[in-house]
Image 1: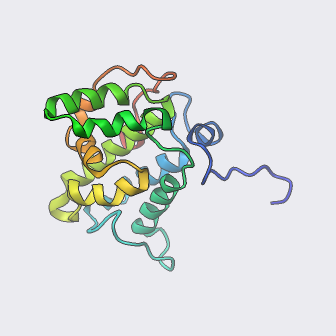
Image 2: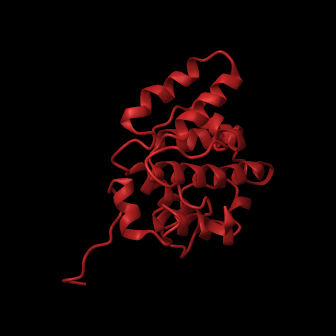
Length: 191
């Protein structure tokens, strides 16, 4: 409609997308992310073979693969790295650590230093993707397959993203120390 302000969030910096569309004062997450994940959970898309890997149908209304594609598109169009330019190098150095426990500990520390919106988005997305992987016997989306799909989308090395998923409880266990309150930690369907 002419004269109404645009609420388009694709291609906006994450913090701006949160400011324009957040659905709760306690959750720093753009509505598009919340609503896509919530829809996929409600529609039992975790049981859909190839969820996040297969393309959606533009002719089928409310196709779960199309909704998954919208979420990936939003993430892909974020103009700044989710791990931030400031910390990106530190994150990639984690993969050079020999000991897995050291990698997990350093990853947890760096994640807790991200800006609030970045931390919240990663935590909720990874929590959701862990649930996807837990249904890999049905949906065929193993940690490897999810990593292949989301690593380039988020600009996170596949080994690092796989570690985030495989060690979710450990790497998101530290108290948030970044740029502001990380929100309640609650997300779609109680994530």
